[in-house]
Length: 357
Image 1 (cartoon, rainbow, N blue to C red):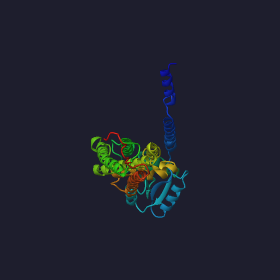
Image 2 (cartoon, helix red, strand yellow):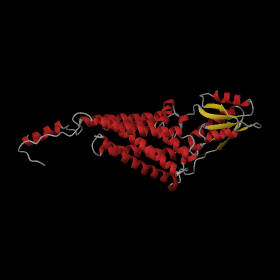
Image 3 (cartoon, rainbow, N blue to C red):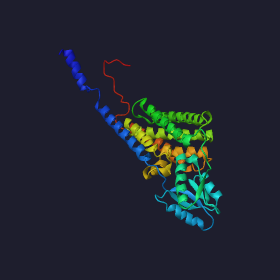
Image 4 (cartoon, rainbow, N blue to C red):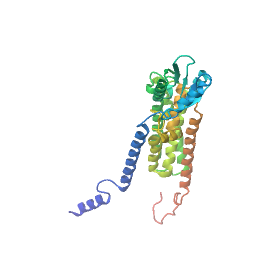
């Protein structure tokens, strides 16, 4: 072996002859864990959807309503959390205000009752409620007629457009933040740089929100509701997810981007109530969904599209909290990092005889 080839061999070995550095190996382990978490979350959330304690309004004449509530609450598996409501109109109003998911109105005469559902809140939920009520009514020797008071638009297959729209906004949020974070170093070195990135994210969020609202509404005619309201929602969703991603990256570096994906994709998407609304999800996913951006965004988009914007105060506060907290953590982390010793510019006297630039 010649001296040149020996030096080349040593350099190749020292750098990791297989081309995989220790840092790359650790990142591969992190990716593997994210992949397994992704599989676990989606399979765990969706493998056995069934209605559990669905909010159901019950209407019946006189004291019969109390017995109806008891019968519904006593069904095997507890599919319903029934509550007595004074009239059919009040029950429908509760559905449209997103206070209950469905309503069963017992006929004062005859054997055919009426079930009011809202497929705009999720077609899979409406179908599950209809099946469970039909079985319960059959056991009581009665029939049921289903009426949809908030039907999905023809172009909104199974009421999933709201979910897919919000998922697209979330993806744009963390991808934009990741691009901003790695464009000039792995971490924001100064509060000034962090402010510029947050400003860039805000501008991107406004454009992304408008684009998504226009595509889902006027262009594809897949989602009804106010384009202006959807635009505002989209901008808030994108900024909330992007700010959270910048915050994670400011605290944990490149690993923070993986943490953001864990929050939004692994935990947020399966718990968002998209393919299966909250009453069909296992307890864990039902509990965390409303507190994460995909769930809050999906609920709000459906409310804008099919429920005249009712029931959106809580979800909008959740999104605003993510946006404010993400921006605050990003700025605080960059400020603290900038105060560390050795981060400032060092003024070193020129060495005698050295050239001056």
